[in-house]
Length: 384
Ligand SMILES: Cc1cc2nc3c(=O)[nH]c(=O)nc-3n(C[C@H](O)[C@H](O)[C@H](O)COP(=O)(O)OP(=O)(O)OC[C@H]3O[C@@H](n4cnc5c(N)ncnc54)[C@H](O)[C@@H]3O)c2cc1C
Image 1 (cartoon, protein in one colour):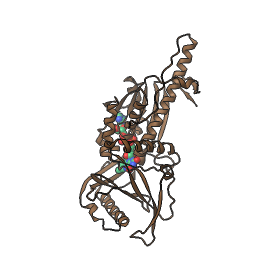
Image 2 (spheres, helix red, strand yellow):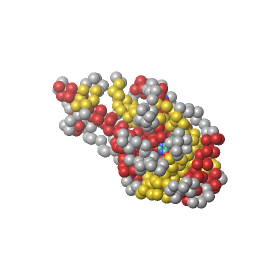
Image 3 (tube, helix red, strand yellow):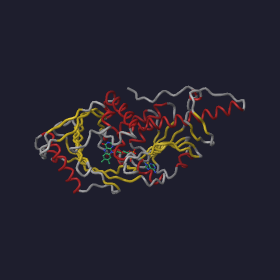
Image 4 (cartoon, protein in one colour):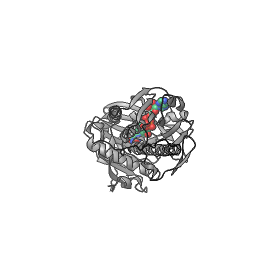
């Protein structure tokens, strides 16, 4: 693999020059959503990077804080490596970090009559197809049960930020208007996790808001399993239970940029969820509407290319000031893809930096100055 680097040098990575470990870098991460926080944590875990996170909105105002959130991949092809990377880390968190708000739970997913079981289930494993009676239809419904990570975002995002602080990540609240301003602060590399903000920051017209609306209702009966169904119009109705509340969703409103709920949509969500719950359990589900805790709207950072809504931009740009890794456009699946994408950010910077050091080292040996042998960074990992 070869990279165009700072001085325009083109370096080929070989096993020999990979022994040079990355310099201690100053990295500016833009964004404190789930994508920015996961990237910052992964960078710190990988080695000695000095990480500062720049953010515009308070944590509670990010899209991430309003997500469902259950592990819901949409594209098993392009996203396969990120899905398995995320799955690995979420499983470790569920097993070892009780306060993280992450657990593994069972999801019951109903499909339209002729839809195949989605390909992403083979990455997760343990899929259990079913055919069940569906109260409101003559035909039995088919679908599958699967065990997936479930993230209580009211707990998880705060835990992630606290964990980043513990690891020495710094936070600076500032509206970043240009990458140059972050390089001027002393950053040697930037990781751009600005979500919807990338539309302006990168002048990227593919980034578009997709509003999602939810209801949080009291979990009075101790529900634990998620239930979801595809609607004939392509939408999804879902019920995601957490210890203190149940998420009822949802809507997928492309190009709707008003971050507000509307009563008609919320009533429709409640009716759909009551129907889904009643069909699944065979019992009356009016109780779902008895105690509404919160009405929630969030703007997903969709990146729409050829009909795909999660055409994530995850690539390295070598600017004249240093490398910029772009990591945005996760649409409906940002929580799901977060750790896999964070690992990819680390790998991209690691490779670019290794190549940079190899170039510098080659120049140093040509002019007779000493070569540097640096200790390799430990592999990215999550402390148990
Ligand atoms: C209702 C709803 C339900 C959802 N359910 C799920 C689910 O079940 N599973 C799932 O995987 N995903 C789900 N999602 C999608 C998921 O929430 C998003 O994909 C994810 O939150 C995107 O994360 P992000 O970090 O890219 O963006 P954000 O959370 O929006 O964070 C962007 C960050 O960038 C900062 N920023 C932007 N511009 C600038 C700037 N110029 N200067 C400084 N800082 C800037 C912001 O302040 C913010 O900190 C859901 C979304 C919604 C709305």
